[in-house]
Length: 553
Image (cartoon, rainbow, N blue to C red):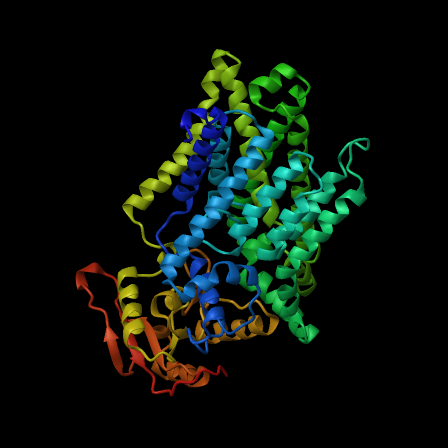
């Protein structure tokens, strides 16, 4: 019979830290289902396994680039509701991330609870993508990159330990889920390998088996990505790249093209983190050879910290190159887009907070252990920052736990009620004109839509078709709002009945879901009740008279 008292203390400590990290990730990412990208990825995964789900939908019928995600998690959609699959996927992704984080953190900082503090700092600095330079996030709703980043952390743990034979398999597996996460990790890791002292550097031939194995794993993600432009006119591919970079995802791919105030905020946040990183780097360099410092900080493997610092600097260099491309080719956005579509800024958004969090946890340990009054006074600052961040999330969620996917919806309860009615009563092959921000429609209604701003296909032809539809479904007015943004007619009721009829006929839309006011002159099949005193619109479901078809024009 086993006796828990025989378990080494460090094993119990390790499990407790792992569970605490998992709890931190739950607090950070545990909003009500669905999260913004879950409506995108899980609906796609469900359609991959069941083509009868939302037939005729432009996005769902487009190319399927994330095969590893569909095969790992998507098959569960055949057995369980989307909400259940989302929670299973979240828990699986957070578990992988927590295990990878602790392995990486303890490879650099050997102090009890440092990995927990580091995890809290990491998510606080990531801030769910709301403040980062390119809007990247890691912990949140489940999608392919959540698993990719979990595998990336295991690869980073091997890298910082100097085990240069093993990172490539982890990065290759990451690329299988999200090819760019893994590809950027490989390039940055190879640059870091070159900084190893020549006498200690692992010979290239010993790296080769791992690189080959990782490359083979990456084909699961690489080949579907390459197929997105296969057989397509190069001019169409160039057009799609420009739409993708500058129309749909400038906040990820071309940040300098955003409004000046937003660029200033992003650069300020990035600059603040760079200052913090440089300060921690200088602190480490001054004391790296001091064995007493190593003991109190937990940085008893200076090579591990050095490799982490170099990796972060190369990730930053990649972002600088991306900025240079955007600035140098601003006069030729078609050429710029062909390069910027490779997400030059994604890695620094993750690596810079990661390095600050791990080195910062070592700094806290050193400050608390050196016995000086001033050190004991300033050391809790990072802990308080992380606690404030997690506490503010908890409080906000207690106030309102609306799913992030419906936060942009006016009268979310009415929207959900109308979608539920459609799910229960509309024909299975019905197709809807929906509001621009209605990307949760397929999740709640289980019916196809003509298009929404969120659900852009990945293949070149699909991207061009999506942009054409957006211009017709949600046209811009020759006017701007009080914030200087173009006014968009973002919902069918604003287009008027004649135009809605034209669009329904063109795209095979059998129904419309729109705000109840102003009303459309179409047959009403359902309308949500509205409290006039609430000052919000309800939602009305209309029939258009168009016959169902699963073939998009």
